[in-house]
Length: 369
Image 1: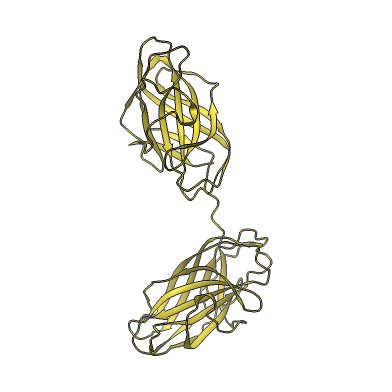
Image 2: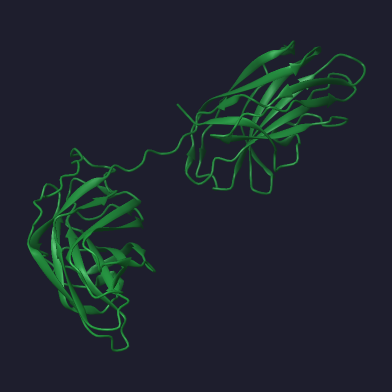
């Protein structure tokens, strides 16, 4: 099921026009309303006035404007169901066509997604509905809009009016892509194969650094691990903790999404010491840095209290990584004016959004005691 867009009282940002319909707007008092995901149905009736017929005139009378946004990376093909609640009837007027148009952020028409010109409904009152078969739109801009144009006709040789209330859902075939499935990597007590390295972070390493493997189905360690940060000497941030993840051949691509990195502090640093940055790097089997998947900087997570600290880092997709490529996570600390140290246990879960293309089942979180 696709997204539903609720008709609301708010006027459309785009000035009502014929857009891809090609219908007349001469002498018409058009109405434009927004239709929003999770919007609140409108309550205010609106009046549409059609022009005087000149032969077989059809007028664009109502437009509904929808803005799917960046979450909808593709607009799927399928059926659009456009309802219209006629609250001031006029049986001399017929709803004779509906067009689904794609426009850009400047409200310039780009294409016709679909149209229905075969149905005709007298505006006798109540909720009417018209279905439109729409084509797919691949890679629309995040600011592109969808405009439903409702077209009417009347044989009466004078202007005609009717009223509607924007209080229905427009059903669409478009939907967000499924969220990437999360793979749970258990932090372990095993030393990282690649040793201690700052890789894509470029950060200076602390005096004592700990690098550990995090693996699917691994076992967390309850051993306290010491990290020592030097006194500043023009350097205020140090790479102190690293985790090495090996997704393996089961993951033919690494999906974009959020990496959730957790750190269990068991002995605190001097007041003012903070976990400030996290980098997600891609490295090869020779432990050579290949790229930065994502980073988060400018954070102020205090580590002068015990417990589990969390940082969520947005990561880009990696297409076709080698089966031996690794994910290298670097935690960076700073903020204190003197040297200090802290302990942590490598026993938390790191969530990685890499499961697109996975042939193995996704393991659920398993946390050591």
